[in-house]
Amino acid sequence: MKQFTVISGKGGTGKTTLTAAFASLTKDAVIADCDVDAADMHLILKPRVLEKEDYYGLEVARIDLELCIECKKCREFCRYGAVNENFEVDPYGCEGCAVCTIICPKGAVSMKKRVSGQAFSSETRFGPMAHARLGIGEEASGKLVSVVRNNAKNLAEQYHKDLIIIDGPPGTGCSAIAAIAGTDLVLVVSEPTISGIHDMKRAIELTLHFMIPTVVCINKYDINEENTQLIEKFCTELGIPIIGRLPYDGITTKAMLQKQTLIEYAKKSEHANESEFADQVWQIWVRIEKMLMDVRYNKKD
Image (cartoon, rainbow, N blue to C red):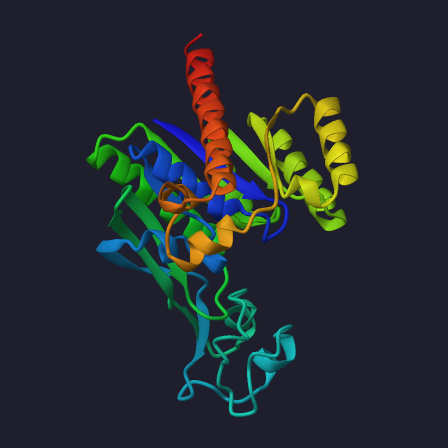
């Protein structure tokens, strides 16, 4: 089983659009939406939920008012101000550090589990999908990413799939680490803007740290070709292949409004430039498939 993750240093680079397009091109993979803080793959793929499970994130403190002597130590030592004047714990303010359980002289404080979201195993028109929904204001998304990836592996075994395509989160935090750890190939989607270049470099530093084979796709390369050259120079110096360059095109927005992948939308389009854009994405996917095969043979060697 091979695992391929698409990430980006910052949001809005076109990561999910490309991931959905890849899913529609292969039609023989498990899709995993690991951007759990802002999950949106379901808007395009419209999954039919097969199984749902509650996700328990950070524990929250609870004060037993019958045991509490109102010594105020919990309020004094809580760095997050989660304990109010009535010695009630704000569940959105509590960070689950459990200091209050240690400092309470009467043992009136305990840590309780709470539902922080849901994880789903579903079916889509392109195959099985693992995804999740994190509750409003909830944290520990890295742990939820691991749950989604585990569900994706189970779906791959159940449906006899040998590839998992992962839509990873932007940034370099714990959720991004959880999305790329142990994968066979990472695609970093970047854009030629100052923030895009800066955050792309951080994302690449992350993949290189974990020694994961990495490629880069420059999206909207024509909005600033000078910055595009800077990206290409940076990647060349590190020996990272540029897997493709995509121009700015309105097809991505049009397809999204129709709840379709850009590949589906382009098939029905009468505009030559939109078909050409979809063909470029298809060529990128062909290159990625070849690299995934090479990774597999290298591992065997």
